[in-house]
Amino acid sequence: MVSLVELQLKVYNSFMENMLKKIIMISLGVLILYISIVFIINNKEAKQLQNNNIVNSAINNKVFKDKVKIVKLIESIDPSYSSSISIKLLHANNLIEEGKYDESLLVLDSIKQVGSTISTELTYSLKARALASKGSCNESQKFFNNISKYNSIKQISSAEIKGCVNQKGGI
Image 1 (cartoon, one colour):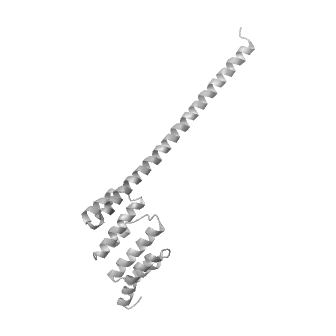
Image 2: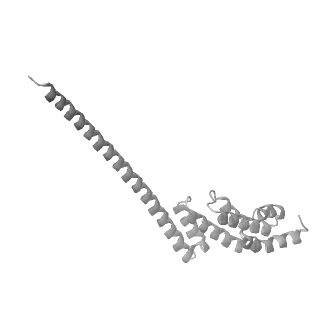
Image 3: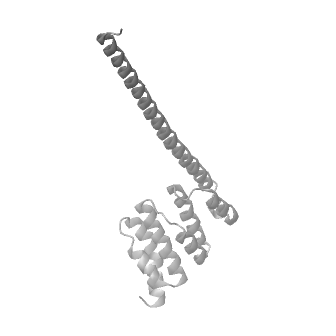
């Protein structure tokens, strides 16, 4: 016959064994979760770094001046990264310099998520310049008035905006 002590010892051992199994399973689950999170974060950072490198290379090679190459580049990069906005701003600026104001406005309108204040204000500046160059002084002035944080950006745009206002007889 099994004594009461032996029975209690078996119950205790069974309880401890089950408890140990639960601890091991929970630890394993937490470890897998941690590894997954680290993998996802590293993968996202690697993609962003790759996107930034592509954009940096394109800027250094002045790809934004070649219409065919810039269109392919814009299609190939991830638009959610801030570096993608930079290349679009450079392309839009180049189009303004070439006198292609409508194309420039299309590029600027394609910028959906502006990540920083400076990018936002550069977008407003370029839109104001393109519209002023087209003779749309009222619309141009609206975008110009949205530039509030960076006076240097406002100063760059002001000459073209004032020229538009003076040329068309004011707003």
